[in-house]
Figure 1 (cartoon, rainbow, N blue to C red):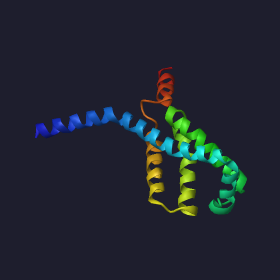
Figure 2 (tube, one colour; figure 1 turned 135 degrees about the horizontal axis):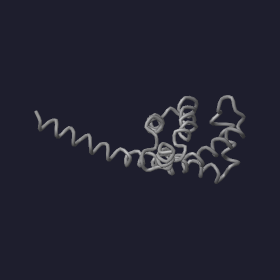
Figure 3 (cartoon, one colour; figure 1 turned 90 degrees about the horizontal axis):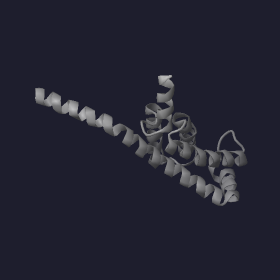
Figure 4 (tube, rainbow, N blue to C red; figure 1 turned 90 degrees about the vertical axis):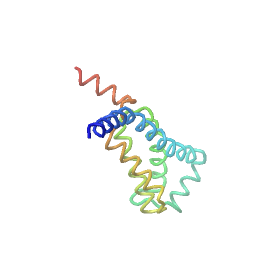
Length: 142
């Protein structure tokens, strides 16, 4: 029995060590997905507005405003995620966009995957490899 307990404690130690690395990988992966989408939107913005008017049809927002906000969030929030700055706040617009895409336009299992990754960041925070972590440590010591 002590061997099993020792092995489990070792497993817990390594999972604690690897958690910040995993959170960094998740942040970078999901940031790339949204940032690349934002780059496509600004490449031909008139086409983006047309897509929002004709195909996406975001509820409650005029197409031009939806296109501007979507593009802005897809370019700004990923940068915050990679830096680990205001990480939890940066996940909220991306989660909202994912939900709108999933429920109004394209019901794809990939969007559920993105939502789970974003929810992981929202619940766990950015982890040790982030500006949020260093800010929190600095003000916790003061």
